[in-house]
Amino acid sequence: NKAQAWSARFSEPVSDLVKRYTASVDFDRRLAAVDIQGSLAHADMLAAIGIISQQDNADIQRGMAQILQEIQQNAFEWSLDLEDVHLNIEKRLVELIGDAGKRLHTGRSRNDQVATDIRLWLRAEIDTSIDLLRQLRRNLAELALQHAGTILPGFTHLQVAQPVTFGHHLLAYAEMFDRDAQRLADCRKRVNRLPLGAAALAGTSYPIDRERVAQALGFDGVCRNSLDAVSDRDFAIEFCAAAALIMTHISRFSEELVLWMSPRVGFIDLADRFCTGSSIMPQKKNPDVPELARGKTGRVNGHLVALLTLMKGQPLAYNKDNQEDKEGLFDSADTIRDTLTIFVDMVGGIRVKPDAMRAAALQGFATATDLADYLVKKGVPFRDAHETVAHAVRSCEEQGCDLADLPLEQLQAFHASIEPDVFDVLTLEGSVAARNHIGGTAPERVKIEAQRVLDETR
Ligand code: ARG
Image (cartoon, rainbow, N blue to C red):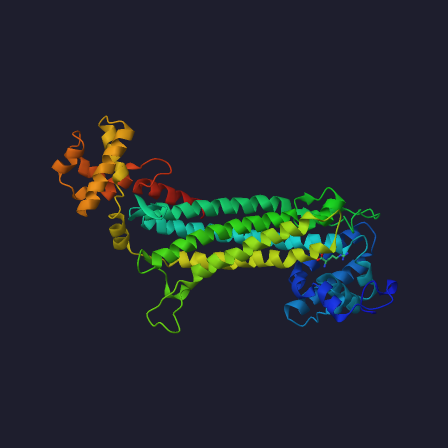
């Protein structure tokens, strides 16, 4: 059992199964680069306060540079016996530089080390995802600008409700993704605090300079309580919650893409590179990418619940439970990164079919509300107007026509105040153009909003 860092205390080795069960190196090795980055800042600080010599520090920096290279070139030999990324790297450092390597862990524990690693790693992931959300909003806004005046039915209960512009519809998602980016930016503030210096749980008796390490690693400050620093993973939970909301928005969008691409609806076509065929049905072009994105939302939501549950029963301070924080967190970050990257490209390749959208908007009495509003402007109370139009719709349904198809005399039979100008509001164009206020669907507004998003995402 000589391989283990604590071997002297133990009289028998763990079984192979227990070794595998407790080891994390298979997944936490992706923290290697940030682990080394943290170690270098720690060593620098130890040298600056005279706990290790400048020569030790120089050896550590040299040894770590070689280790990083070995890892990047896939030449590093990872060992399950050494449990995790931290012990693997430390062992190799000692092999390379001897006693100086053994001094690196002075005033430090794997508990504050791993918390630091996760925060460094997560900070970079957050920055990547914020940028992808920016690109996605930009592509949505570009398409929205092109389709500021393209009309499709807006739905409630999946039934035709009122006409809206496609640009307006797309910009709804741009709003969601904007809030998602804001959530990540807010989460980043709490991620970006340095745990190192908390040591195992109580701090350390060495006169360490935590602020110096924080600055070297780009943290905004240090964690103010050592027990909290090593034990809480709330920052990771926050990230998983933000990731779950991103996927939830992506999933709603995906559901619409699938629906719009269904031959029954036919509002859009997705580029072939995001679709697959069927091994049996030659006619098929399936929107696999949005369907998978919708499906992957489940795992990201699951990781959030897993992390919350992981945390809820833990007494202060560090417990090995926390080793279980990583796979779900990694997977959430991977899933949103890959999904957003694909969606940035996919949105750019949406082919819109305005004729099908328009035809659908002309069915289902989408301008019924406009007729009621028209009557209100002629002095009819809204509730009475609502009732009048309901009669008109019913009559259209019986005759198998649209409101705009009724001759003026028939409309006037429903209400005497109806005049020839009624046909202006019964058209789809008239309906959307009338909703010309902040947040409305009028083409003029959509152009302004799309331009705003384009300016914001430059
Ligand atoms: N691999 C551990 C983790 O991921 C590192 C800290 C281990 N500390 C300990 N005392 N067992 O949390």
